[in-house]
Image (tube, rainbow, N blue to C red; front, side, top):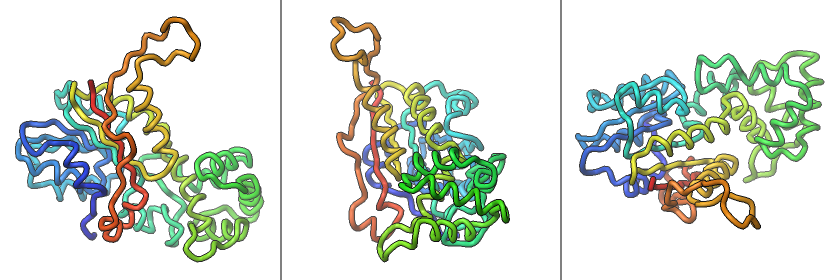
Length: 308
Protein backbone atom coordinates (compact mmCIF):
# COMPACT_ATOMS: atom_id res chain seq x y z
CA UNK A 1 0.00 0.00 0.00
CA UNK A 2 1.25 3.49 -0.86
CA UNK A 3 1.99 5.76 2.07
CA UNK A 4 -1.17 7.61 3.04
CA UNK A 5 -0.97 11.40 2.67
CA UNK A 6 -2.54 13.24 5.63
CA UNK A 7 -4.76 16.21 4.81
CA UNK A 8 -3.91 19.76 6.00
CA UNK A 9 -0.91 18.45 7.95
CA UNK A 10 1.07 21.73 8.11
CA UNK A 11 -1.96 23.71 9.29
CA UNK A 12 -2.75 21.11 11.95
CA UNK A 13 0.81 21.06 13.27
CA UNK A 14 0.90 24.86 13.44
CA UNK A 15 -2.32 25.13 15.44
CA UNK A 16 -1.73 22.05 17.62
CA UNK A 17 1.62 23.49 18.76
CA UNK A 18 2.99 20.19 20.06
CA UNK A 19 6.56 20.30 18.76
CA UNK A 20 7.84 20.98 22.29
CA UNK A 21 6.94 19.88 25.80
CA UNK A 22 5.01 16.78 26.85
CA UNK A 23 1.61 16.41 25.22
CA UNK A 24 -1.13 13.85 25.49
CA UNK A 25 -2.88 13.53 22.13
CA UNK A 26 -5.89 11.60 20.88
CA UNK A 27 -6.17 10.86 17.17
CA UNK A 28 -9.85 9.92 17.04
CA UNK A 29 -9.70 8.62 13.50
CA UNK A 30 -6.23 7.11 13.26
CA UNK A 31 -6.74 5.78 9.75
CA UNK A 32 -3.39 5.00 8.20
CA UNK A 33 -1.39 7.04 10.68
CA UNK A 34 -0.25 10.08 8.73
CA UNK A 35 -1.18 12.74 11.25
CA UNK A 36 -0.10 10.62 14.22
CA UNK A 37 3.30 9.96 12.68
CA UNK A 38 3.89 13.72 12.59
CA UNK A 39 2.56 14.23 16.14
CA UNK A 40 5.01 11.66 17.51
CA UNK A 41 8.13 13.28 16.07
CA UNK A 42 8.39 15.04 19.44
CA UNK A 43 9.76 12.19 21.55
CA UNK A 44 7.91 13.41 24.65
CA UNK A 45 4.46 13.19 23.09
CA UNK A 46 2.10 10.30 23.86
CA UNK A 47 -0.83 9.34 21.66
CA UNK A 48 -4.00 7.30 21.77
CA UNK A 49 -5.04 6.27 18.25
CA UNK A 50 -8.63 5.12 17.70
CA UNK A 51 -10.11 3.39 14.68
CA UNK A 52 -12.98 1.03 13.94
CA UNK A 53 -11.08 -0.55 11.05
CA UNK A 54 -8.81 -3.53 11.88
CA UNK A 55 -6.90 -3.06 8.61
CA UNK A 56 -6.10 0.57 9.43
CA UNK A 57 -4.91 -0.33 12.94
CA UNK A 58 -2.66 -3.08 11.60
CA UNK A 59 -1.08 -0.74 9.06
CA UNK A 60 -0.66 2.11 11.58
CA UNK A 61 0.90 -0.18 14.16
CA UNK A 62 3.76 -0.78 11.73
CA UNK A 63 3.96 2.86 10.67
CA UNK A 64 4.16 4.08 14.27
CA UNK A 65 6.49 1.36 15.49
CA UNK A 66 9.25 3.95 16.01
CA UNK A 67 7.20 5.33 18.92
CA UNK A 68 5.61 2.10 20.13
CA UNK A 69 6.16 2.84 23.83
CA UNK A 70 4.26 6.12 23.46
CA UNK A 71 1.36 4.87 21.34
CA UNK A 72 -1.82 3.18 22.55
CA UNK A 73 -3.97 1.81 19.72
CA UNK A 74 -7.67 1.24 20.34
CA UNK A 75 -10.20 -0.60 18.19
CA UNK A 76 -13.54 1.15 18.51
CA UNK A 77 -15.47 4.35 17.88
CA UNK A 78 -14.18 7.78 18.82
CA UNK A 79 -17.35 8.31 20.84
CA UNK A 80 -15.64 5.93 23.28
CA UNK A 81 -12.58 8.18 23.71
CA UNK A 82 -13.25 8.91 27.39
CA UNK A 83 -13.17 5.19 28.16
CA UNK A 84 -9.98 4.71 26.16
CA UNK A 85 -8.33 7.66 27.93
CA UNK A 86 -9.34 6.27 31.32
CA UNK A 87 -7.76 2.92 30.43
CA UNK A 88 -4.41 4.71 30.10
CA UNK A 89 -4.90 6.82 33.22
CA UNK A 90 -5.48 10.03 31.27
CA UNK A 91 -7.97 12.38 32.92
CA UNK A 92 -7.33 15.28 30.53
CA UNK A 93 -5.60 15.67 27.17
CA UNK A 94 -3.83 18.46 25.31
CA UNK A 95 -4.91 17.90 21.70
CA UNK A 96 -7.70 15.94 20.03
CA UNK A 97 -7.88 15.45 16.26
CA UNK A 98 -10.98 14.25 14.45
CA UNK A 99 -10.38 13.54 10.76
CA UNK A 100 -13.93 12.63 9.75
CA UNK A 101 -15.24 10.54 6.92
CA UNK A 102 -13.52 7.77 5.04
CA UNK A 103 -9.85 7.22 4.21
CA UNK A 104 -8.48 6.89 0.69
CA UNK A 105 -7.25 3.29 1.21
CA UNK A 106 -10.76 2.27 2.28
CA UNK A 107 -12.25 3.87 -0.84
CA UNK A 108 -9.65 2.26 -3.09
CA UNK A 109 -10.16 -1.28 -1.76
CA UNK A 110 -12.90 -2.91 -3.88
CA UNK A 111 -13.64 -5.55 -1.25
CA UNK A 112 -14.82 -2.84 1.18
CA UNK A 113 -17.56 -1.72 -1.24
CA UNK A 114 -17.26 2.01 -0.56
CA UNK A 115 -16.84 3.16 -4.15
CA UNK A 116 -18.94 2.71 -7.27
CA UNK A 117 -15.74 2.97 -9.31
CA UNK A 118 -14.91 -0.65 -8.47
CA UNK A 119 -16.98 -3.80 -8.59
CA UNK A 120 -17.26 -5.23 -5.11
CA UNK A 121 -19.73 -6.32 -2.43
CA UNK A 122 -22.23 -3.78 -1.10
CA UNK A 123 -20.53 -3.57 2.28
CA UNK A 124 -19.39 -0.03 3.29
CA UNK A 125 -18.64 -0.91 6.93
CA UNK A 126 -15.85 1.00 8.63
CA UNK A 127 -15.84 -1.65 11.37
CA UNK A 128 -15.75 -5.27 10.29
CA UNK A 129 -17.74 -6.06 13.46
CA UNK A 130 -20.70 -3.94 12.40
CA UNK A 131 -23.68 -6.21 11.57
CA UNK A 132 -25.22 -3.57 9.29
CA UNK A 133 -24.13 -3.44 5.64
CA UNK A 134 -25.18 -1.40 2.62
CA UNK A 135 -26.59 -4.58 1.08
CA UNK A 136 -28.83 -5.14 4.08
CA UNK A 137 -30.15 -1.58 3.85
CA UNK A 138 -30.76 -1.67 0.11
CA UNK A 139 -32.50 -5.05 0.26
CA UNK A 140 -34.63 -4.57 3.39
CA UNK A 141 -35.44 -0.89 3.99
CA UNK A 142 -38.85 0.39 2.91
CA UNK A 143 -39.40 3.00 0.21
CA UNK A 144 -39.85 5.73 2.82
CA UNK A 145 -36.74 4.69 4.76
CA UNK A 146 -34.59 4.62 1.62
CA UNK A 147 -36.00 7.95 0.40
CA UNK A 148 -35.14 9.55 3.75
CA UNK A 149 -31.54 8.31 3.56
CA UNK A 150 -31.09 9.42 -0.05
CA UNK A 151 -32.62 12.84 0.69
CA UNK A 152 -31.09 13.63 4.08
CA UNK A 153 -27.64 12.10 3.63
CA UNK A 154 -27.16 12.34 -0.12
CA UNK A 155 -29.17 15.46 -0.98
CA UNK A 156 -30.69 13.55 -3.91
CA UNK A 157 -33.60 15.53 -5.35
CA UNK A 158 -35.28 12.47 -6.87
CA UNK A 159 -34.89 10.46 -3.66
CA UNK A 160 -38.38 8.92 -3.73
CA UNK A 161 -38.04 7.92 -7.38
CA UNK A 162 -34.72 6.20 -6.67
CA UNK A 163 -36.12 4.47 -3.57
CA UNK A 164 -39.08 3.09 -5.52
CA UNK A 165 -36.77 1.83 -8.26
CA UNK A 166 -34.58 0.04 -5.71
CA UNK A 167 -37.57 -1.71 -4.13
CA UNK A 168 -38.94 -2.77 -7.53
CA UNK A 169 -35.57 -4.04 -8.77
CA UNK A 170 -34.85 -6.12 -5.67
CA UNK A 171 -38.09 -8.08 -6.19
CA UNK A 172 -36.45 -9.68 -9.21
CA UNK A 173 -33.00 -10.11 -7.67
CA UNK A 174 -31.49 -8.81 -4.40
CA UNK A 175 -28.65 -6.31 -4.78
CA UNK A 176 -25.24 -7.74 -3.96
CA UNK A 177 -22.61 -5.63 -5.78
CA UNK A 178 -21.62 -2.01 -6.16
CA UNK A 179 -21.92 -2.25 -9.93
CA UNK A 180 -25.58 -3.34 -9.73
CA UNK A 181 -26.44 -0.30 -7.61
CA UNK A 182 -24.39 2.08 -9.76
CA UNK A 183 -26.18 0.96 -12.92
CA UNK A 184 -29.58 1.44 -11.29
CA UNK A 185 -28.60 4.95 -10.14
CA UNK A 186 -27.54 5.86 -13.66
CA UNK A 187 -30.72 4.38 -15.12
CA UNK A 188 -32.99 6.30 -12.72
CA UNK A 189 -31.04 9.54 -12.27
CA UNK A 190 -29.23 9.72 -15.60
CA UNK A 191 -25.56 9.68 -16.54
CA UNK A 192 -23.82 12.92 -15.48
CA UNK A 193 -22.18 15.30 -17.88
CA UNK A 194 -18.41 15.52 -18.00
CA UNK A 195 -16.77 17.21 -14.98
CA UNK A 196 -19.91 16.80 -12.86
CA UNK A 197 -20.35 14.51 -9.87
CA UNK A 198 -21.50 10.98 -10.79
CA UNK A 199 -25.08 10.40 -9.65
CA UNK A 200 -24.07 7.22 -7.82
CA UNK A 201 -21.62 9.15 -5.63
CA UNK A 202 -24.41 10.77 -3.60
CA UNK A 203 -26.27 7.48 -3.24
CA UNK A 204 -23.14 5.70 -1.99
CA UNK A 205 -22.37 8.56 0.40
CA UNK A 206 -25.87 8.35 1.86
CA UNK A 207 -25.65 4.59 2.39
CA UNK A 208 -22.19 4.85 3.95
CA UNK A 209 -23.41 7.42 6.46
CA UNK A 210 -26.39 5.23 7.40
CA UNK A 211 -24.32 2.04 7.71
CA UNK A 212 -21.79 3.65 10.04
CA UNK A 213 -24.11 6.11 11.84
CA UNK A 214 -21.53 8.76 11.01
CA UNK A 215 -23.48 11.90 11.89
CA UNK A 216 -24.53 10.50 15.27
CA UNK A 217 -20.89 9.63 15.91
CA UNK A 218 -19.76 13.17 15.05
CA UNK A 219 -22.16 14.73 17.57
CA UNK A 220 -21.28 12.29 20.34
CA UNK A 221 -17.57 12.48 19.59
CA UNK A 222 -17.28 16.27 19.65
CA UNK A 223 -19.22 16.47 22.91
CA UNK A 224 -16.92 13.86 24.48
CA UNK A 225 -13.81 15.62 23.15
CA UNK A 226 -14.74 19.00 24.61
CA UNK A 227 -15.21 17.41 28.04
CA UNK A 228 -11.89 15.58 27.86
CA UNK A 229 -9.70 18.54 26.88
CA UNK A 230 -7.75 20.31 29.59
CA UNK A 231 -7.99 24.13 29.84
CA UNK A 232 -6.05 25.50 26.89
CA UNK A 233 -6.35 22.21 25.03
CA UNK A 234 -7.37 22.19 21.39
CA UNK A 235 -9.89 20.25 19.32
CA UNK A 236 -9.19 20.09 15.59
CA UNK A 237 -11.90 18.71 13.31
CA UNK A 238 -11.56 18.01 9.57
CA UNK A 239 -14.82 17.45 7.70
CA UNK A 240 -15.38 16.51 4.07
CA UNK A 241 -19.02 17.25 3.36
CA UNK A 242 -21.54 19.86 4.42
CA UNK A 243 -23.53 17.60 6.78
CA UNK A 244 -20.47 16.97 8.96
CA UNK A 245 -19.26 20.56 8.79
CA UNK A 246 -22.67 21.91 9.81
CA UNK A 247 -22.67 19.74 12.94
CA UNK A 248 -19.15 20.86 13.87
CA UNK A 249 -19.99 24.52 13.30
CA UNK A 250 -23.23 24.35 15.31
CA UNK A 251 -21.67 22.60 18.31
CA UNK A 252 -18.70 24.99 18.31
CA UNK A 253 -21.02 27.98 18.10
CA UNK A 254 -23.24 26.89 21.00
CA UNK A 255 -20.23 25.89 23.11
CA UNK A 256 -18.70 29.33 22.55
CA UNK A 257 -21.89 31.16 23.61
CA UNK A 258 -22.83 32.17 27.16
CA UNK A 259 -26.62 32.04 26.95
CA UNK A 260 -28.78 29.82 24.74
CA UNK A 261 -32.17 31.10 25.91
CA UNK A 262 -34.73 32.07 23.27
CA UNK A 263 -34.62 35.79 22.33
CA UNK A 264 -36.92 38.00 24.37
CA UNK A 265 -36.48 36.45 27.81
CA UNK A 266 -35.74 39.17 30.41
CA UNK A 267 -33.16 37.01 32.21
CA UNK A 268 -31.10 33.93 31.40
CA UNK A 269 -32.67 30.73 32.69
CA UNK A 270 -30.56 28.18 30.84
CA UNK A 271 -27.42 28.88 32.90
CA UNK A 272 -25.31 27.84 29.92
CA UNK A 273 -21.77 29.24 29.92
CA UNK A 274 -19.28 29.15 27.09
CA UNK A 275 -16.58 26.52 27.42
CA UNK A 276 -14.49 27.12 24.30
CA UNK A 277 -12.96 29.80 22.12
CA UNK A 278 -13.27 29.28 18.37
CA UNK A 279 -9.86 29.80 16.74
CA UNK A 280 -11.11 29.62 13.13
CA UNK A 281 -13.77 32.18 12.18
CA UNK A 282 -13.94 30.47 8.81
CA UNK A 283 -12.82 26.89 8.12
CA UNK A 284 -9.27 26.41 6.91
CA UNK A 285 -9.05 24.81 3.47
CA UNK A 286 -6.17 23.31 1.54
CA UNK A 287 -4.10 25.48 -0.78
CA UNK A 288 -3.77 24.78 -4.49
CA UNK A 289 -0.41 23.05 -4.09
CA UNK A 290 -1.80 20.49 -1.65
CA UNK A 291 -4.91 19.90 -3.76
CA UNK A 292 -2.72 19.07 -6.75
CA UNK A 293 -0.83 16.47 -4.73
CA UNK A 294 -3.78 15.08 -2.79
CA UNK A 295 -7.22 15.23 -4.43
CA UNK A 296 -8.90 14.29 -1.13
CA UNK A 297 -7.85 17.70 0.24
CA UNK A 298 -10.18 19.50 -2.17
CA UNK A 299 -13.23 19.07 0.07
CA UNK A 300 -11.48 19.29 3.44
CA UNK A 301 -12.52 21.92 5.98
CA UNK A 302 -10.67 22.36 9.26
CA UNK A 303 -12.28 23.99 12.30
CA UNK A 304 -10.43 24.48 15.59
CA UNK A 305 -11.60 25.27 19.13
CA UNK A 306 -9.67 25.86 22.35
CA UNK A 307 -10.98 24.86 25.78
CA UNK A 308 -11.35 27.77 28.18
